[in-house]
Length: 131
Image (tube, rainbow, N blue to C red; front, top):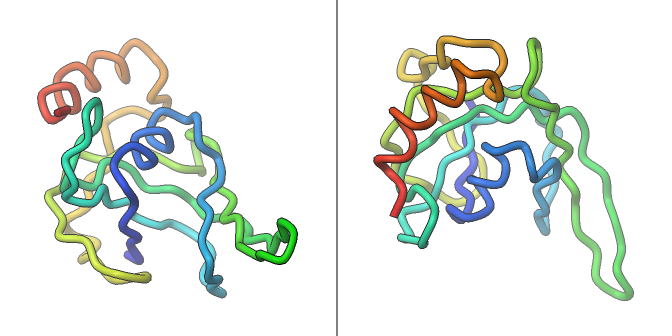
């Protein structure tokens, strides 16, 4: 699977469904499942050095802010057929897009991460990893 390293605080916002776009100075023709890997930078309130979710990239839009341009990578919601949580996976990040063996990625055992089952799983799997 294609993967992307993101600062832990932003990756946590994606995991929690609060961040629906990822901003980059570069674009790609790739669309589909993208493993979100938290960089190893220890950040208070975030998990460092792990992949916790797969964000489905559905579109990339070029935007301009004055004389600066950037790309907004649009992320599908966390629902059946969209983005999804995974079992925490220790990953060493890299620059740009990189590949992670699909066999290592195990989807969480529920379809709605914001359900009671998702909340229990978050408490058990994610909370112990937070700095």
